[in-house]
Length: 310
DNA sequence: TTGTGTTTTATTGCCTCC
DNA sequence: GGAGGCAATAAAACACAA
Image 1: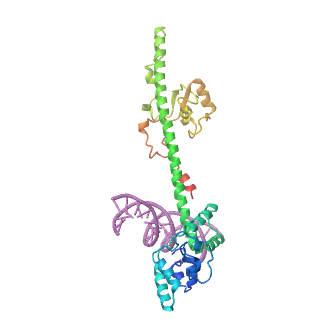
Image 2: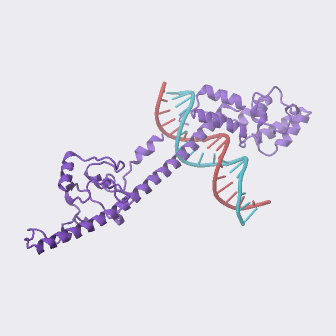
Image 3: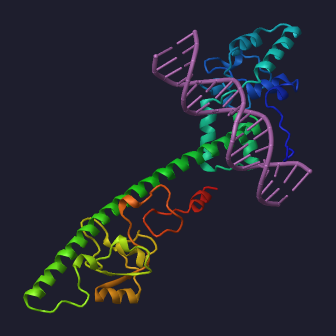
């Protein structure tokens, strides 16, 4: 054992201390219906928990037989036999009483770590061994941690679902706006033709001017901004559209994270986007985003999350 | 009653801190 | 090197459906 810790079994080893009264006081609890003065327990109970439990701390079968025996024992030989039997049985686990658990729970709520003094005091109050108290706290901390992780998972899941819904709406809005740009551009071209204006040198079809996913891989793109800085459109914060332009994370829709240059570009109706482009919804792998990728796959830093719990 | 899944108590081994 | 914490695990106790 690396830590050199030597555990004494709290059952047989302690029971083997040949001090029956200690054994009884610390590990044997009569049922609540049983008057204490009918019991053969040398000395007085150190704790109300020893007699107030609704469920016997020593809940294994044979308790009643043992109790009746201790009330009526009349011979040394039988005592030894019974101790043997008790020692054998006490190797099994015993559950704490409801009252003991409630007391421990209250104590845990107050402070989930256990200083040595408090451990000893609790053990004394509950009629348990300090090691039992320590183990209970250890297990309780483990349960608390598990619950906490479940809560955190649920809350992250909810955040993710909400963001995904936002993203879906944004994709729809983007498509709609693209369509609008196409129509307006066509209209402009048509009007220009009707007035006899010469075509712009590189004005081909309007749809060819539009940014598209097909052009992925370029360093930057020039995108006509149709609804620049409109904070809210159809229930969607369109500022998220600017995420790639400098905002690190789309959580603050009411604030513009644009630089002065970007503001200027906005006023000109143009916004340079970095290589980050909006992927098509079906292209996104929500389950396993590439680290640091510039998309809405939400590359979460697992370590940052998991480490806080420790 | 019995099989099975869940919860609770306890142990073991490793790690960190003093 | 000892004390204590934690993760993993064992196993008893318990709950409950069939």
